[in-house]
Length: 164
Image 1 (cartoon, rainbow, N blue to C red):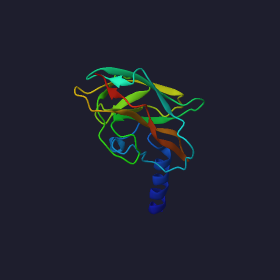
Image 2: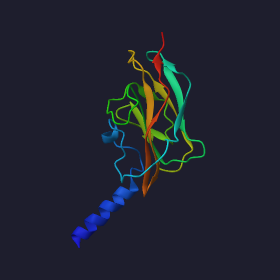
Image 3: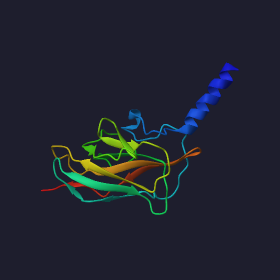
Image 4: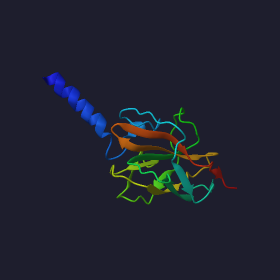
């Protein structure tokens, strides 16, 4: 009976996902820690950014969205890779958080959801590091539903180049 209870509890926790945001363990690979999913086709999630260039310690406003799509969870970072198979440490920091939607994870280098209610978009402000890091990309993992799990890896922005 004990073993049965442990198995049931394990499945329930997997199905619940991370209703209060991604854990720090997800920072480098940006892969959700709940049941895998089968997604197909082009990732529908996009970024709308206030600039395609960044200055040291400058800010960029952004919005993550997908036309006609709702989502429940997200993890947004900025880094040099635009490939989901590459793990890396995020750069810069997210500032001026909307505490009803997002919270810091990975120090201040990423933002994730506070609640897993449905959203049509999420807006953010990213502050560039003090020294230029070359071409960067805003990237996100987006969770549409937790059980059965449906998530998208690798929503990437246009390249952000250091301004001269």
